[in-house]
Amino acid sequence: MVGQQGSHYQPKVPSDTDTDSRDSPTILQLPASALCHQDGTLTASASVSDIKKQSKRKADYPDSQALLQKRRQVLGPNTAINYSDPVQMVRGEGAHLYDAEGNEYLDCVNNVAHVGHCHPKVASAVSQQMFTLNTNVRYLHQNVVKHAVALVATMPQPLEVVYMVCSGSEANDLALRIARSSTSAEATHVAVMDGAYHGHTQTLIDMSPYKFNGPGGAGRKPHVHVLPCPDVYRGLHLDGRAAARQAIDEAHAAGAKICAFFCESVLSCGGQVVLPEGYLQAVYEEMHAEGAVCVADEVQCGFGRVGSHFWGFETQHVVPDIVTLGKPIGNGFPMGAVVLQRRLAANFDNGMEYFNTCGGCTAAGAAGLAVLEVLREERLQQNALTVGRHLEAEFRQLQQEFPDIIGHVRGLGFMLGLEIIASRESQLHAPVTARWIKDTMRQRRVLLSCDGLRANIVKFKPPMCFSRQDADRLVHELTQVLRGGIPADVRAVDQAPAPAAICAPVSHVATAPPPALAVKTAA
Image (cartoon, rainbow, N blue to C red; front, side, top):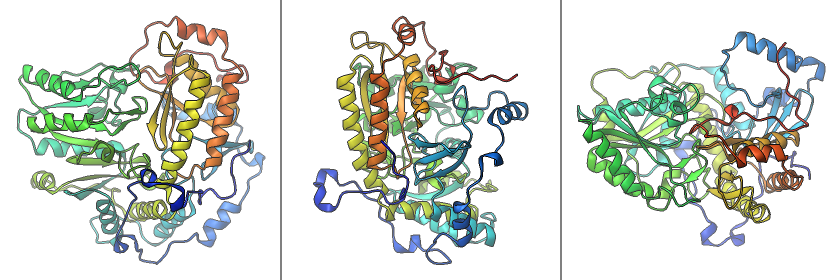
C-alpha cells in the first residue's frame, strides 16, 4: 500500500451529508478582522516554490555515519536522538519525510508540524515577514495584536489576555510565575499528574514526574504533589476529587497550600491518557476551593488535535484560569503563548516589566496567523475527527486480532495510543515489545514513538493533514508487523520483567533492535 504523496494539504473530509450531528466538531470560528494580513492573502512566493522544486542529489548530503560522529563531538552527549541507527532527514511535505537516500517515510508522530511539514502558506508567511521586518514587541506592529486576537477568539470567556513566549516550556514557566502572583504567601506548593512533562527549565523539571522519576532525575521535591494517573484499562485511580483532596491535605500537613494545578487535557508523555468523564471538573472544584490556579497545558493536545473540540480542556467541560500553548502554534517556528483571565494578568502587573526578546516577534505573529488560517481553510480539525475515528476503529480491530499484545486502545482524534502488554491475562506492561514494534515500523518507513508511565504505549500524533489513505497505510504496515510475529526473546523479557522506573523514556529501555536494524556505534 502506498501513502498519498500528491496533495497533502487538501485532506478528503466528509460532506455535511456524510455525518450526523455526533460527527460535527466544535469548529474553530475566527472573526475576519483577526485573519487579515498586512499584504493580503498569503500565497507561496516564487522563491518558496523554487525551493520546494529543488532536488538535491544524494552526493550533496553528508554521509550519515560521519554526520553522527560529528554530532557526537559538538552536541551535548545526552541530546535526544531517535533510533540506535539514526535516520538523516532532509525534506518534509505534509505527513511525509524524506531521508538522504531518497526514502519516503509516513510521519505518524511529529505533532509540531501541525498543519503539515513545510506547509507553503506558513513558510511563505514567515519568509515574507523576515524579508520585511522581524523585531520585538517593544515596537507597535499589527501581527502580534492580530495573532493575540485570533487566539482569544478560540477561547471561552473569561480567557482574554495573552503573553507571547518562545516555547511551551517558557509558557508553563511563566504560568507558574503568574499563579504565584495571584495566590497567598503560604501557597508555595504545586500539584501535577503522574507521568506529566511540562518543560525543560529546572523549575519545570522539578514538577514533571516524567523527568524527575526517570533516569538522571532527583525524585519528587517536597513542594510537588503528584496525582496518580488514571488507568481506565485496569480500573485504577479514576476518582479525581479524591486525588485532589489527597494532594491538598499533603500540602496542608507540610504547613503550605497549593498554588497551582497543572494538567494536560490529554496526558501525552503519560501515555495518551484520556481522563475519565468529569475528572477535571472535580479536580478544578477542589483546587479552586483551595485558592489554587488551574492551568491547562495544551502544548501537545491543542489546536484541534482532539477532533471534537479545538482545545482539549473543552472535552472535560472546564474553563481553566490559564492555558499554555507551544509546539503546533507555529508549525515548527519556535513560539508559544499563555492565555489567561484578566484578573490574573492584573495581579501579575506588579510593576516589573514583562519582556521576551523573541516572544511575539513579527515573524512569529505571521507564522501563528498562517497556522490558524490553514486549520480553518483546510478543515483540519474535522479531518482529525473523521480520520481519527476511522483509525481508532481499525486499531480496535487489531486489538481483537492480537489481544495478547494490544491491551488497550485509547485517545481522541489524532492523539491515539496502543497499550502494549505481555499477555491479556497478566496485563503486564511490555515496553520492550513496544520499542520493537516502533523500530520495526521504522524499517517499513512508518514513524511512531513510545511513551507512558512504563514506556509501553505506542503513540500516534501526526500532522493534522494525515489522510485516510495515510491511515490505511499505517494500519496495513502495523498489521503485517504483528502478523509476522514478535521475536520470542523480546516477549520473554516483557513476560518476566524486572521492575522498571516509572516514567522511563523508551530510549532508556534496554532492548535489541529488530534483526533488519543493525546497531551502528561510533568508532
